[in-house]
Length: 289
Image 1 (cartoon, rainbow, N blue to C red):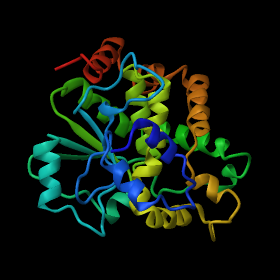
Image 2: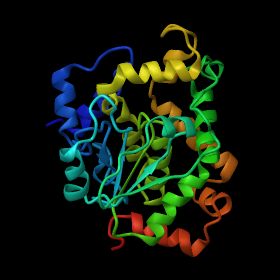
Image 3: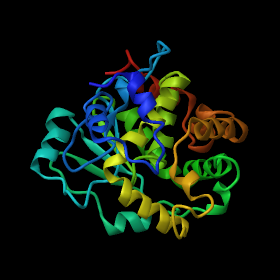
């Protein structure tokens, strides 16, 4: 089993380099990763820990799960459904994909699980590659992640309503890679639950490991969405990479544009202060139920 230090180091592997199979297998068998046949990049955010800090708070165990999209190459079978419903107790799945992505491959129907998808303002998942050329790509990530908060705000609001109203019903949310849109929402939830910044950034970076089984497919998806002609196209490698500086730039932008995640929830999503308090309590270690 890999330690959190091993996971941190492995998460910094360059996207153009394959993670060694032995290291990958050990990592994917280590919390917060959860093995669900037919999925990838799946983990319980309540098991996020770091080697350098003792979090004052965080999401409670067994309530909030994140993943990539369901694999078309290995469809979710009865074994995968059983893990989701019987082992993890998932009651609802939130799909954070664009109109085109959802239409092309809707989530599978699972007995006892409610599928939730709200049409976003984004018809297709596209990015402006020019934004990722400068520096390490921080400007592009800042713009892309702020766009997630705006474009997918109805989906995010629905997910937070679930937290407010159904604290005893574990849920999973995903996009295509389970990396960027899913990462933004995961970071928002962790921040509301009182997780420390190191834990939030570790969860963010772990998608480099979790997406490795689908790395080639996801590189092709990114190439299509960005219009890149190859991995050496200026800005493309930055777009496909994960760095802590991307998350830092986004958090600074949230502070600048929204005065923080909590104000985004109350001022943009229109939750009341009492509702915000309930959401925070229902998410956090020691909270409901």
